[in-house]
Length: 453
Image 1 (cartoon, rainbow, N blue to C red):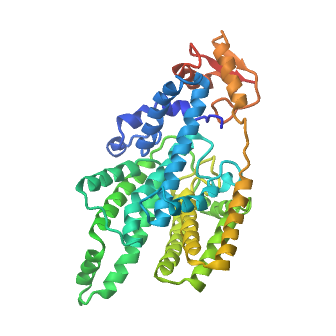
Image 2 (cartoon, one colour):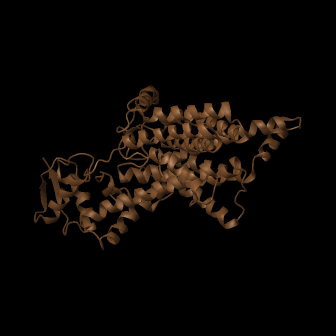
Image 3 (spheres, rainbow, N blue to C red):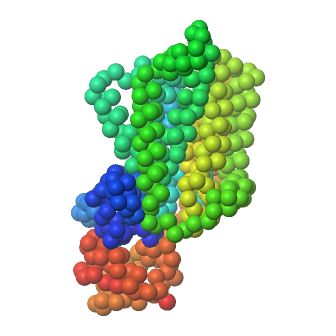
């Protein structure tokens, strides 16, 4: 994939971005009403910057400086996808052994949904842009990792963490998560709300106390203690993260009314579901799986799986309903886009994997063969849709080679593609940061500006 237009300002970093590293938790937003880029994304920005400040030089021992940047991007995307797949495998199987056949089956079930081309524009997870991958896919992977012990405890009745060191690490993890991008805080708050909505009324009705206060205290005490503590902490941190995120200088001028944003939701949702069949096929298979479980295998685990689907549906509705409150982005005019709904996409993929895995282990004889054929057919649909599209970065590589060989300080790049930018660079001054980064990576000996016609 070609490089994107946000790399230089994040990696060097650009003027204003240094504030993120000086004030990682956005205290100045509270004390001074400071406004600067991405005040609630310290850990995503830090990981991104550190990786590209150091990793290319390791790879330059084996490949050219130009190639090292593309290898760095590809390697970290693969690692993030592996993290997502392994974490999803734990959710689907409840098994801690990730080299067994059952675990590999779970991964095989869901891997076709990780689209590089094909349906990526509507249900993408690993983004073509490396900046977006660090901002969306990586935080979502970490979010799934955080909730894994809670899911195992609630769904599979496995013991919750008791080791004090692991509990401390999990506590620190809540801080890392909530300052790691725009998706996590909103998803966390919806999950916490639904968790308490599920537990509190049920426990409240079971109480034999007469007063409302006593019944409420009893209901609160019945919620698993560690769950309650961690969900409260991460929810408070998420509220704080959303608050300081409102002072993001990159988008503070991009304003349309909340009412107008809500009016655009239906169109965004319609385009997401109808432009290509990927999402609809996934939803269709989820519906079929739910029907089959409800009709034939409504065991204790089957009931749990169906209940989980209900809560995923409620989560999706509330999450979409809250999206317009997160602000407006000109590059996301209809509010809903594959990146903004990534938590929903991942939840649906997880449910598909979980329900399909359950049915494959439940069906016998001819039924199993028919169902297995259907699963293979779905996998082939997504696999063949995701056709390889090689050479997308060849034009950009040629531009870098021209820059590296040029003896001029200002270079006219003669090509028809963007060069580490979102669009063609017409003004040489717009390439200032890019020139600094290319020199830092050793692609050019001196800082060079460039422009295109």
